Amino acid sequence: MPPRRMTDDLGVGQPEHASADLPCLLNAISLLTNKVNKLQLDLESQKKINNKFNTAPANPHILNPVQRRFWDYPLALHFLLNLKHTILRFDGQNLSMWLENSATTITFVYKINQILIDSFLATLVDNDASSVLIVIVQTIDDSPKSLLSKQHPSPASLFLALKLHCDHSSCLDKLNTVRNLLTSFKDTGLQNTTKWLSLHQSIFANLVKWDVSLDYFYALLIQANVRLPDLVNHNVFEVLMHQSFNPTFANVSEATSSVVVPVAVVKHNASISAVSYTPPTQEY
Image 1 (cartoon, one colour):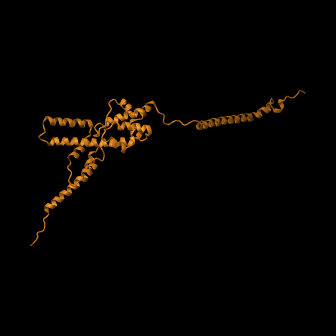
Image 2 (image 1 turned 120 degrees about the vertical axis):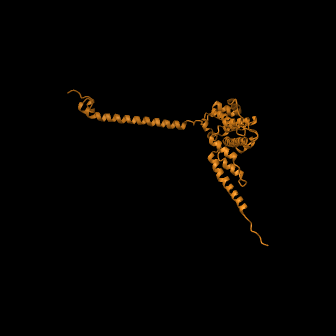
Image 3 (image 1 turned 120 degrees about the horizontal axis):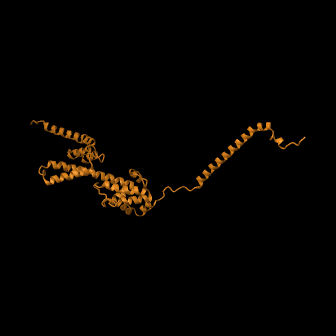
C-alpha cells in the first residue's frame, strides 16, 4: 500500500472535500477583508481627530501690508488714494464727494463691497477703529470737530452723525434755494434784469446738480410758500416736514393739512365770532 499524503487529513487534494469547504473559505476571506477595511477607516478617523486637537487655530485677523500701513499712517494713505481729497463742509454740499473718498479708502484697505461699509464700520475695534476715526475727524470742518468726536467715539456712530447732519443741512439749503426762486418771481422790480437772469441760472444749476425729482421739487415749493399761522409752533412744523431728509409731496401735504389747515380754520372762526359778536347793552 502506498504511503498516505499528509494533505489527506486536511481534505486538500481530495475533490469531494475541496468543493465542500470552498464557500467557507470565501466567507472567511470576506470577513477578514471587512475587518481590515474597518480598521483602516478607524485609523483615518482617529488621525483626523488628532489633527483637529493638535493643530493650533488659525489667526482670524491676519494683517495684509496695506492694512499695516493704514494702522501706521492712516491719513497719508487716505490722501494717497484720494489725490482730490475733500474736507467735509457742514452745509452738506460736498457730502457725496466726501463719502466717495471715504469709501475708496475703506474698500481698498479691507477689501469689502462699498454697500457694506455702514455695517462694516460697526465691527471695527482697536487699531482699525482708531485709524478710520482719524481719517474721519481729520477730513471734516474744524468748528464742530471736537464736539462730534467726543459725542461719537466710534467710527460707525460718527459716520452716521455726519451723514444725518449734512443731509439735513443739504435739505435746508435746497429749501432756501426754492424760496429764492419764489421771491424772484414776486419781485417785479428785479425781473428782466441781468441780476435776475443770473439768479435763475444759479438756481437752475443747483437743481441740476442735486438731481431733484419732480415729487421732491413740488414738496419744496409747498414748504417754501406756506405761511404758518401764529398759533403754529414752527419747530414742530419743521419736524413734521422733515420726517425724512428727502421729503415727498405726500409727506409735506399731510403735515400741512394736519397742522396748518386746522389752526387756520380755528383762527378764522375765532375772527368771525369776534366780528359777529354783539356785547349786551347795559341799561342805566
